[in-house]
Image (cartoon, rainbow, N blue to C red; front, side):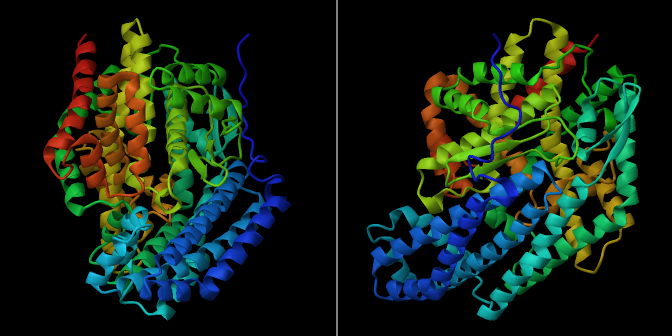
Length: 598
């Protein structure tokens, strides 16, 4: 008999009772007590211990801070899951406000600790870091010292933290709620259906071009209707960031995201420079695919369309079995982990309306589990989304044995394990295929991801840079946002995409993630980094899994340049590193062009 897997997740194992969970309320109360204790004497205790070189006390406080951070993360993840599964959950929305207040108070304390560290004399600081017992905290302490807002007073730091809750972060939550409330009417198979935004977006890979086109224009019509509202949200989010950057004396809008991603500006510039040099073959791929569909250029609503009529749909149970079978060839831990995720109800995959449109993976570091959220409709793209999010979950699993403060890895590395996991499934699918049509189908899906990372993500990066610059002069109108988006897409795609969605700034959720400005380039970094790791994994075989786990465990305790040098022996500020990854993608283009010559 075929094994069955639950398509709805189990959140009660984390906190029983959903938005009315008494267990979760007790968790919040404990957090409030811990924050109160930290606010009362934590920083004073820290200052006193530093001055007296009582390092055991410093270590104790750092463990307390780590404990609070992990428990806040646990709470935030639970609320995120509740609201994603039911955006109208008022209890969860109310709890979100409570946790946001706790988070704000916690960040105030961390800001004070950072300020203390920044005021320590350099020679004293070097001595402190060499003391036994603090070696595991060396990276994070140096990072905090460098990040300190030394030019802001305590009153200004407090004001910024307060404004984040009901101003800055509230706009991000409002965006999610707004998108989740939208119903999109699309005719599918002769019947008009009221779909969620996520379900409508999933139709971009529908086999019928008329359905793809109708879904595309139905969404564009909604975005046009609500453009004023969305532009206000985006203007307020970025306007707030600009004010805070100015207060903190940051030199440009990239300083904060580079800090958060633990990346040098030189690395980012080199990456985009190399990608820009090698875009032409990907334009050629888009042109060839358009020709095969009877068009002179690639229509944006056809980009995700299947390249062949080959039936590639796979139900959820078959997808789970396929994933488990092929990750087992990489390593025993990954296989065991994926089995647990499917068997224990870690995945919310049901295809139903009134869900959030955005797939994600939520980490529960205290419980030691993760939860994956998506809408699974049976396409090969859904299989890839599923393994992508499970890759994130495996990264969380790898971090379970890591010291509390070192569990938090940057977004630049966050997309590595997810992309790596996708490559396992791509490789398996290619090996399983016997027919040219199937091979073309899989190659097309691989190349879509190359185009997304080298062209689409680049367009997001260009748009965000240009929008920031104009926002410094005041509110930017929806009309101008559309123009900026169109210009950025045309430049990034080198005019190889026809009828692009000028409302990409509306429906791309990453622009509205308040915790992560410029959440675009980490995808491209993670994509190319993962390709390099996967190439090494194929060389070494199943024995590579332990090396891979060590790399993931180090991801929270060093910058990306050092991480890549330590585990791959590569300098990522050099063009050669990026060219190696792109060369693998260029081979896919060559094979695609060769297979479609006739």
